[in-house]
Structures are given as structure tokens and as C-alpha cells.
Image (cartoon, rainbow, N blue to C red; front, side):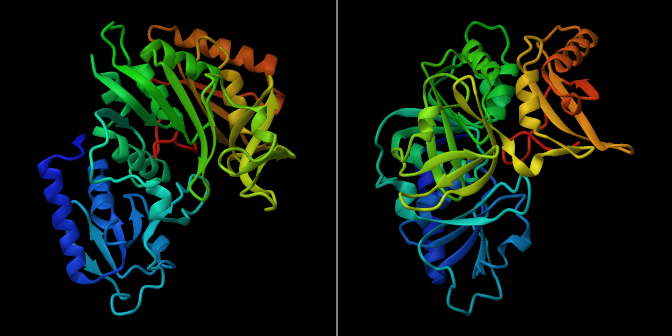
Length: 399
């Protein structure tokens, strides 16, 4: 859905919402955000009030709000406010800013507080700063979605909130920046036809999942961007590292000390650890990581490990090696129940249009025998048209 950041209709929605909330005197609200335009309205309406805002998406469980105790729930689309049992009490988390939930990919979504100044970085969202056109494929209720919209409000005259199919079908469209997860970009590239009048994207921006060489080749072929940015970030700590060299993984220089973000990374026992500031201890991130080919590769979350008869298999490692095959453009690796081993490895693979599916399955299994340990080799290989995506915009997990 396109949003002109400073048109009259949008401005009227913002003013109405700001006046409605101000009239209630409420300071700590759960705000239901179902679309990108809802997020734009909520940010521009509530920041001047210095309100404490809990960003709630369609998949946020009600139980996740219990500890934050919002005074009311605001539905941005309708403007309706539903008081909670906390309405008569002083807000326990009423400091101005946003509470954003993690995606909960491997567990319960957890909230992190972000003060308004850290999100806006001093930008004046009420003034047009340029004529850029942005596309955003992140879910609006995620940290990545909020951060991307915050940047766009300081730079863009218009924002398109895109699905992968929207971007692929945007014949002749031109974007200064398009931001989304690697899964978003993989699906957009796969949907892109042979039409030469393809969408023009100056800067591709992505984060939230591992990036492999196959994906970078797909993006180059489908969109021919002038720049590709990869971000390693988290809901809890924000942006940690940025890569713009067009290669998969992170350069080993990110392990050399505290970089521009003031954070430092290291790898111990196959897990990525992070120090949030000079002198702060290194703490586990929960991300599996490995160094190979002179690069640091994030392989996925530790909670996603598949236990095959007592052998721990990292799905990201398996997927990365299977995607080395020219016949394979996307892979989802997941556990398949086994009465003997507890679980074995399954793999859904996406191939280029017109491929012989039976031949691809044979090649995948043969390649797996060459490059993977026995427990890592997929016992089930299925060719699919596309991979499922979770509401967060990341690849869906599980069988």
C-alpha cells in the first residue's frame, strides 16, 4: 500500500488520532498496528505526546502484554480506545517511547523499550526532507519495520508497503530504497519474470536472517541494484553491524573490536556473543555462527537445532550448503519426526522455473552426501513453488 508521507488525508488521520489520545490523558497505550500506514499514523501522532506505546501486531499474544500493564488498547485503523483494568492507575511503564516485541521465532515474544530519540535520531517527521521513494517489506509491528519506517519518515516523500509479489510485479517502478528480510527478497526475485522493464531499486536493504551467495546472485539478476546493505541487528540492541561489500556473511573485521555502533562481537563454541559497550561482558546472542571462507556466517537460532539421534544439526548450515547447487534457489530445513532417531532432517527446495523436479531431488541428495555429515543429510527432499513466510516476514519454521 503506497503512503504519501505528507498528504492531506494522512495528515487528517494523524491529527484526529493525536487529539483523541490527548483528550483521554492516557500515557501508556498498547497500539494495534495491522498495516504500514497504521504504523506511520501511530508514530507521527503519538511522538509529539511523548506517549509510551506498546506496538502490538496481529500475532502478538494477549498474555505478552501482562507485564507491561497498558492503560488502554488503541486500534489505529478505527481510532477506537478500549480501557484496561490499569486505566485508573499510574502507568508503570509511562516513559515516552516504544515497546517493541521480538518476533518470537523460537520462543515467547519479549518486549524491548526504545526511547523516541533513539528511533528518530533527531529527524523531524513533520517536515518533508526529500523526494525519495521507499519500499518496505518488513512487518510493521517488528523492530525492523519500525526502524525502517522511522528512517523513511525522515527521508522519503512516499513509502510503498510491499509484499514480494508487489515488488516483483512493479514493472517500471523506481525505488531509492527497498527494505525487507532475506526471505522477502528471495521470494520477490523468484516471482520476477523475464520482462526487461523490471523494477529499478537503487539500494537493497535486508536483515533478520542469514544471507547466502545464491540470494545475492538472485537479487542482482532480478533488480540490478547499485548497492546492497546487510544488517545484523536485534530487537533488544538495535543495529549491530552493517555490510555493504556485496558478499554473504560479515567480514571478520566485525570481530576486531568495538565498531561504529559501540558494540563488539565474538564467537565461542559456535555461538555469537555480543558486548553492548566497551567494558561490558560478552553475552550469548542465541545465534549459531561459524567462520569459513574468511567471513563470519550467522547460521540461525540455537533453538532451531534439530536433534538427530543425539547429534545436533544446525538448519542454517544445511541450507547454506544445499543452496550452493545452481538448481536450488531457496531452501527450508526442518525436523521430521522419526520413531528411531527422534527426528531426521527434511528440506523443501525451490528451483528455477522449468526445472525437472525429480532430477533436482536426485542432485540435492547426491550433493548432500558429498558435503554433509550423515546426520545432516535430508531424508525428505520436496520441491515446492515457494517457501512459506511467517507474519514477521521471515521464513516459517517447523515441519
